[in-house]
Image (cartoon, rainbow, N blue to C red; front, side, top):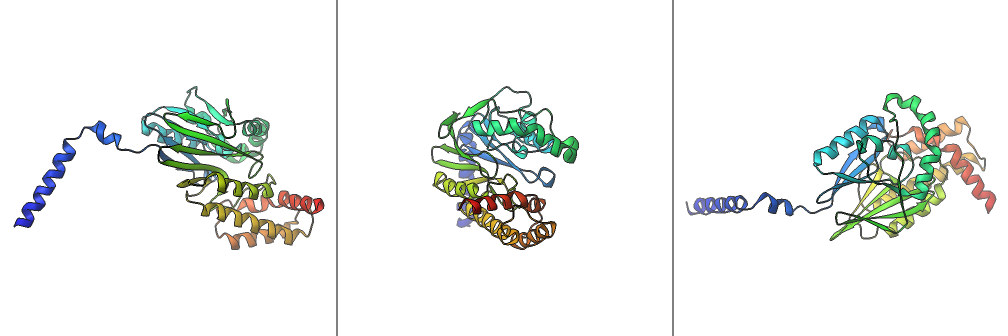
Length: 309
């Protein structure tokens, strides 16, 4: 009986404690920033976008590929009931900037990228539309919004008490890559874009696998102390994401080297063999089409490296 009385008293005390506290006091206990993850499905080639919620606002990092995904990302934003005050871009591939217009919803706010990322977007946008709109049809957003604010390497942008610092990596997965390191009191996380494509086959068509490998090691240093790494595709994690991407790139390069025999391109039979070997290495169909798509650019890159020795 005494146990029951003591238990009842404890419950009553806890209820009284929470009832006595105002909603403002309870809300104040939420630790900002909060990261909200949007992961596209197959129709959006599994691209990620992120909403970084601060105490009074939201900063987006990347914006997905398709109309459906970018509108869903906007709906996620609306559900937070806070204004979007900036969009940050990691690189200039359409699966990361195409959805900016839908995400903005008519708002006039900074869309921030490094000078290199902005140049790549403007240079390639028309060609990317010509290449991919026939595939994605009505899912291809139009018009698209380009960066309007230049981010400088190492310089932080402070929004609502949270600092977003860009690190310009140059060529890697794309012709111009960057990452964003986010810091606040007791918080350090990093949005590493397509430095890592976790759980999917990699896009190597831009032909910079060697610089990409170098970028992985640079990023390893830049994100030291970060509690979470958020990649451009796949699930968030720790430094093991960098290890996994490095091993994938090394395996792809080694396989192309063995098949090409110094040639700057692969035959269709060799591409079939490349596909089979990489599927055996990373047993997923996610973005499998990229295995063959990237073959000739990497063969050309490796042939150039051999000639330069």
